[in-house]
Image (tube, rainbow, N blue to C red; front, side, top):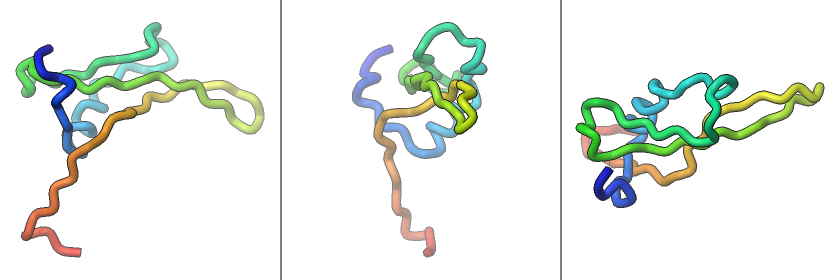
Length: 79
């Protein structure tokens, strides 16, 4: 995918990409590249599988996004 390292997604784009994530407990690879169809294969967001452990010792996996996001402050937004 061209220029993907120059892609700085917005928070809504990261959220959109999370909807594509497979179940981390059954997915075999440690990374997953999400590229919604609307992005026309120009960009992708890489998620990493991370192992967590509960206090009782049970282990489970979750996806993490380790990149930066673009936050736009628009004049019509209010605090």
